[in-house]
Image 1: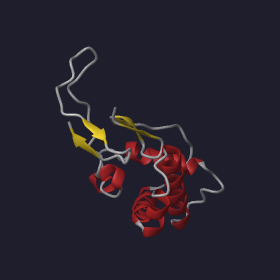
Image 2 (image 1 turned 45 degrees about the vertical axis):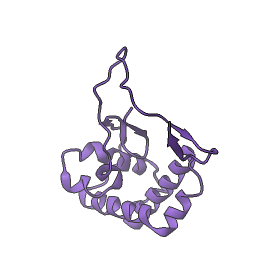
Image 3 (image 1 turned 120 degrees about the vertical axis):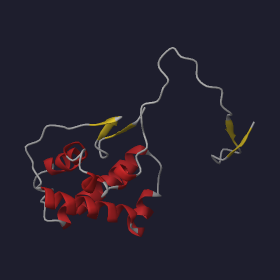
Length: 141
């Protein structure tokens, strides 16, 4: 399945790019990406993230961090929300730039890749786990 979220800049297993006329120069983008990464890891944002596991909540907190990072770096995202699109396009725009890719957690921690299974193939035999008392934990059966 890969990664699919508008804030990650990736659909499936490949970066994507949406059309926008908004541009952020490389140096500013470098600072924005570093600031976003710092904000995401901060106690304040971790507390916000931990309030809910709902994808829409996680997206909203991420967008809040991204807007704050843009503002902090002098990008007027409030005047033009297309700067968010430009930020989300950075993964595509800098896909071959290891320096830029190392700046964000969603690049550093992304291990998604297309596997070997295809439609119609038998799935491998694997142990299954059941949730115990609905707490999300489980014991192998």
